[in-house]
Image (cartoon, rainbow, N blue to C red; front, side, top):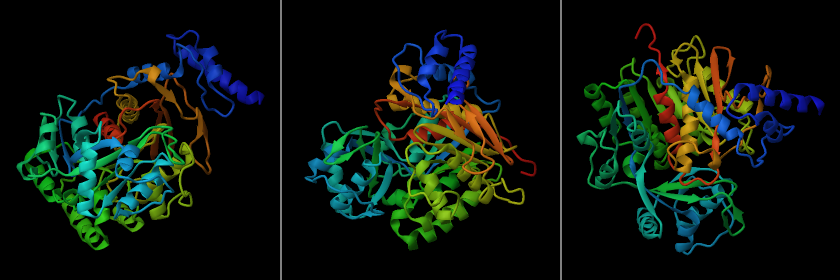
Length: 494
């Protein structure tokens, strides 16, 4: 007990010395840190959130060599964002027990799957197989009071985020209908082959932290996404996207939408995945490719992506659900876990990230795989794992991703310390097995780094928005921002 108190006191003194703008901080930190390393919430004008936010602003710097042209594809749509509970009530559905469905075939499947994820506070995305029923639900959603229309689809959202940097030219390839084209940033170039007569619509059912429906109570704010999206479902614009790269000449390619094929059935995705691999392989080897993953449920499909696609991309972005499911599909570390309990353990996350880079990336010196970077994000913290010698400025990249998560969730231009809170443990381990090193987060320098073999890990906390305005697209914004601040090192022989 004495030792734990001493650690907290030493940390408080260290932060006090490092952060001069807050003279009361050492005493305050003793109140913030409990013996188990978790932070409580005393009312104070001078708190950890302010310290971390100020530190980010001083530590985050752009890389020496920046991207000038980024090509993004291939899933794009219009998002209809609506209250999940409100819409289901408007559809005359009653609350009840939850049950996960890999594919939604009815309104009852929708209700059960929504409840299943709402009670866990987890994000998920599903395909709705019945076109007519989906169109009726979509009309009800669009007419629901307070429903809002936004740019949707991982590729379009990443493109929109990248377009906020005036020096970047962004190409977006995907099924772009009239409404989506109208909503896109003027800076985004859309190849003629991407334009189509009708928009694809995705329904985003949001819920707030603590929101209740029947006996179900959401532990945190999140959203459930579903659609009957055929164009994105078969990645119909992938070949158009790859063909457009010769003329556009990008420095970086960002690819997303593979998860959309899962709902089309095994025969289709097996054939289409082979075609996708062939198309991706046609991209020039000196151009790094980032793959953005999303929610999936078919272990065979995830394993196929891991075996066939991951080795031919340079970087991937994913959240805690996708990380654990990837490990379960491939028999990786901690695959026995049914789900994360609370904040995902940093050591267990680190184990899986290392396994990905060793088994499907370049961390194995004998491997010819291209994968050298994994950007992991969860509600409370982010980790960037990179194989040494391939990427630069990754500390700034992971902090920039966390900063944009904090500001975008709250709908503010910059982080507002009064609207966010720290939820990550201040002490954690670098692995769940040996060598198991304990590290301490320093709020005045909120970037913790460690190495395992030839892989370097950069970890930073997230200042979690207390009352998020919109959760959709946060992962895409995080990955996009992290890429903006990343520098790729071309390898000899390219």
